[in-house]
Image (cartoon, rainbow, N blue to C red; front, top):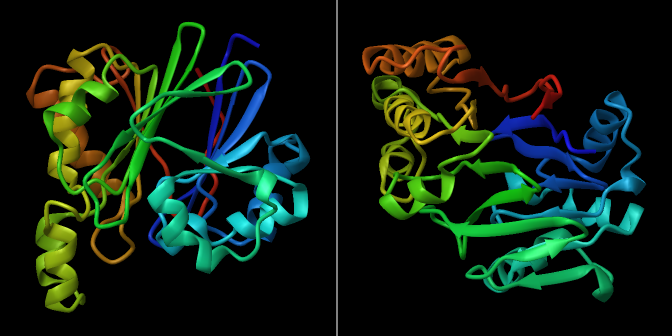
Amino acid sequence: MDEARVCVLGSGSSGNSIFVEAGNCKLLIDAGFSGIRITRALKEIDIDPLEIEGILITHEHSDHIHGAGILSRRYGLPIYASEKTWEAMEPYIGEVDPKNRKVFNKDYCFEIKELKIEPFDIPHDAAEPVGYSIYHKNKKLTFATDIGHINKDLAYKMDRSDLVLLESNHDVEMLKIGPYPWPLKRRVLSEKGHLSNDDAGKMAAWLARNKAVHILLGHLSAQNNFPELAYKTVASILEEKGIHINEDIKLDIALRDVRSEVFYV
């Protein structure tokens, strides 16, 4: 199929997993929910987990790997991760068949069937965290959450994407007055923490000017954000910069605990 499909099975601190289909290849990016929950979500969109070609892991935090080992053992799925991420997550995901232990060099593209996968560095407090761009024919899909700040290299990895899942984790004022202990607030606000709504808006505007087509806001905090605020903040920044939603860029929210619709790209 020339048309790609993306479904965010959930995106937030309680778990992350994204289904991607392009050509004749079906993938998961992260598996941070239970195996049962991910299997159920896939079946809701008529996907048999046995059809999945592999799980791409962004980093070793539990909300990204919780179900990875279970799914690999149950369905024989390969798990793709960088060497340092493998070292960091291996004690937590259980035994994985050696043939399904796929290690890539984060500085190089690799292929799964007819898809080109480009990992790229993201600024986060993990061993070797990456985002991914997935290419098929003339389509580019980019997934970048858990990013403490935007830098020039990261921005250019994300430009010209037909769809971007972009972190919009927190409202800064909600975080500052919220229930988190100060060390955790400091971590979230750090250069290797999570991206705020305001910074997501600035990045969305840059992407819109650089030929991005559709932005999904994801990895929203349960305590320091809510969907309407994230959407309104980003939308306001876009409008202030003369970028019109549904004319110049599409904008949607990927919720924490609810599977998204299937987006056709």
